[in-house]
Amino acid sequence: MTEVELKEKKRKVQDDVELVEKKKKHKKDKKSKKDKKEKKSKKEKKEKSSESVEKVVDASNDVAQNEDLLKVPQAEIDAFYKENEVTVEDPQKLNLRPLLSFSHVSLEGTIQKEISKFPKPTPIQAASWPYLLAGKDVIGVAETGSGKTFAFGVPAIHSLVSSSNKKDISVLVISPTRELASQIYDNLIILTDKVGLECCCIYGGVPKDEQRKQLRRSQVVVATPGRLLDLIQEGSVNLSKVQYLVLDEADRMLEKGFEEDIKNIIKETNGNRANRQTLMFTATWPKEVRELASTFMRDPVKVSIGNRDELTANKRITQIVEVVEPHTKERKLLDLLKKYQGGAKKNDKVLIFALYKKEAARVERNLRYNGYDVAAIHGDLSQQQRTQALNDFKQGKSSLLLATDVAARGLDIPNVKTVINLTFPLTVEDYVHRIGRTGRAGQTGVAHTLFTEQEKHLAGALVNVLNGANQPVPEDLIKFGTHTKKKEHGAYGAFYKDVDMTKKPKKITFD
Ligand SMILES: Nc1ncnc2c1ncn2[C@@H]1O[C@H](COP(=O)(O)OP(=O)(O)OP(=O)(O)O)[C@@H](O)[C@H]1O
Ligand SMILES: [Mg+2]
Image (cartoon, rainbow, N blue to C red; front, side):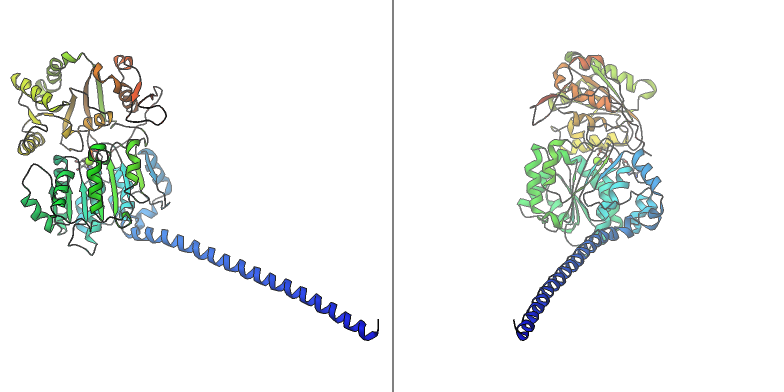
């Protein structure tokens, strides 16, 4: 090889090495650029997501996470959760703090003043308001008489005050019975009146004309499904601007009898669930309705007070269950009235539940025959008679009310001392609601139940409720067996053994 050829080869080799190195460097540069880009986008994504969480929290900060609340030591918050058996299932992990006092929330002035007449928020109010005020969908499950009406009502009216739309119907509350709708209306109007908003109550059994007029000027509507659908169908009501939809007694509203009506009403509201805040409140939340509920809600936060998966009764109610022969019930009732209204107790309020309208009418006659001045409320009476009877009982003009399950849920009648179940209801959930007409807002009460062989398929579920509230379980009840009949169970059909006799209840406090 000549010297020239040798030089040429060396140069080529040199060139090749340079080229390989160049390629390597390029590859390295490209990789590091890519890494940097990925890192940057990851960082941005992280910032963005924490920003969106922050935003929601910020939005509620002023109102329901104020400085005073943020200063409370975590140990105090933890103790509150434990003492009140509060569980919050919060899919977005917002971790909003419960309001331990009314000073921890900054509501519109007159609403704040009105609600601060109570000593402090009840646990369901304390734990659900922060999420509601942050615009979240909420399922609220808490015992009977624990202030659920203001739990959903106060944030609804507060939000409406700060909303730009005060022309259309923005808040819609649905209730299963006329009497309950009317009671929710009485609660909400205290708030709406003070802030210049209009509230109306829509239910059947009374003329429609006045309701049509009221609907035209109201922003808040409380309604029973039947009459509301009637008015929707005739074009007297426009729900397309509803921002805040509440199903009170939500499990009842999602049962078969109401399911279609509810679907049809919800279709009429701000159809897309993303544009609407949806709330479901109740004291009993059976598994059977949970899936249907989720179809109307968007990432709901579930706030439960007390045992979250079992059916639980208010623990301040003394529950007495007596197993009797069916034909002795009405005589037994007279004995019970002597016990609960005899002598000095003659003005103590007693609420008697029968199951069927016909039974109620017969028992009413029998009680009158025996000298009792009894008021009655059931489906066969006119709306005016029903309203009159309930008002007389509420005001203490009559101290004895006989009712069917139309009065089982939600009614807040002051100072009912005793509930008597003359005939057991069709479900144990209804039993929990019925007895919940006593022992409200921190008071105590007695529920006396006559149980017969005809209801033995419910014995197991009733035993569970009694155990859960630390109440004595009569031997006669256990003799019926501890098989509970559920509406449905995937693996076992309708019947399966579901009673835990070893379970010990925890005490729950209510101030
Ligand atoms: N923060 C509070 N402190 C004390 N009492 C309250 C408070 N908020 C509401 N109450 C009162 O508690 C009573 C029961 O309230 P409410 O009817 O809302 O109970 P509920 O939880 O809806 O019961 P139910 O499950 O039977 O419908 C009412 O008389 C109400 O005025
Ligand atoms: Mg209620």
